[in-house]
Image 1 (cartoon, rainbow, N blue to C red):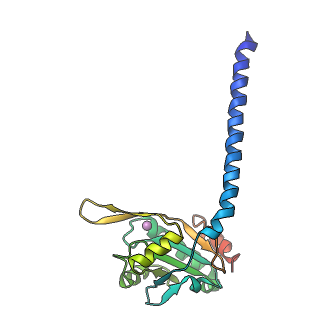
Image 2: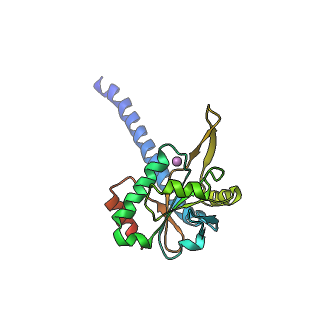
Image 3: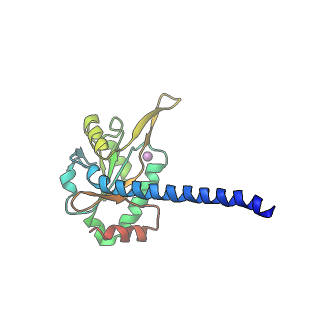
Length: 197
Ligand code: NI
């Protein structure tokens, strides 16, 4: 009797274990594929203007690691939090902060003019460059970095934007390395970034 009730459990257990193994294998294979295709696929030529009026292109990135973050100045929480974290990382880098680029690229060029960017970024580390441009210029860079964003109307006639909130780490050759983990101690994040100097 004991054997008869135990056997189905063993069978179910073995089946469940095989599902887990199958899922792990599938994730492993997908992860491997992503690794092969992603680095070449993210990034590309662009031309934008920073908050001081300087032209920034993909060539401005060369020779230094670059953190690239997309957002918009009317963003209520994610962008200000992330820009604060990026500022803390730059501070934690000490003198080496001058050897990296940190870009905040607007997904909302209609509202984020150069003047708006300048005012907004005055609350953060001065080494952060806020980039904006024409809707076409912004659409191009967003498509190259595979950034998702969507205008979401608000009740008062205003709008907000849903957007990709990941930070791209690009190496000294302007090639995508990996998403940058900003959600750790600034000292640790700074140490991560220094490895790419
Ligand atoms: Ni945001």
